[in-house]
Image (tube, rainbow, N blue to C red; front, side, top):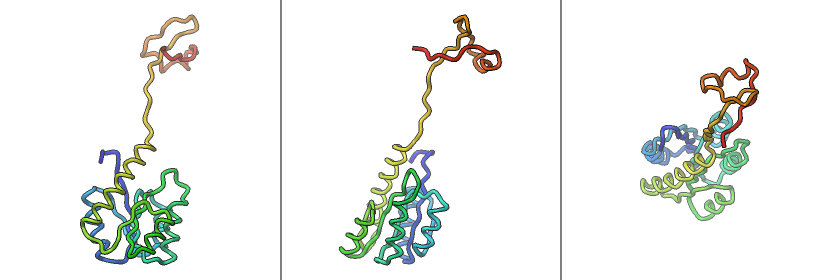
Length: 170
């Protein structure tokens, strides 16, 4: 991860084993972690914070699906990546339909959590780079009303002196 990329993760789970495994894997990736025990609290945190990854331990409760829909229907330009931890094929299908980007099957192990988080991390980096704004440097030449070149140190005074507009050098 580059110094400019500091990611934040919201872990929504009341299962201590899930939280512990995800915390260890997230810390290895240098991702800041925020916890909450229920999806309703998670929706509130999403509204107040700029979260890049949401990890949801899904048991099929309506609140969890509401959280996943809330993540994907947010007004933010860059939506968080959603990693869902499920138990069984029915919840896998539900999570896919709800818009989860990465799905991990239970029982959760260090290997499966690390593999799922690496996939989510790759998506986060790709989204960060895709949405990054880069400064564009262009050379300009300042000329006065007679077409004479101005010295570079006087460019900042163009408006004060009433000189002609800057023209780009071709």
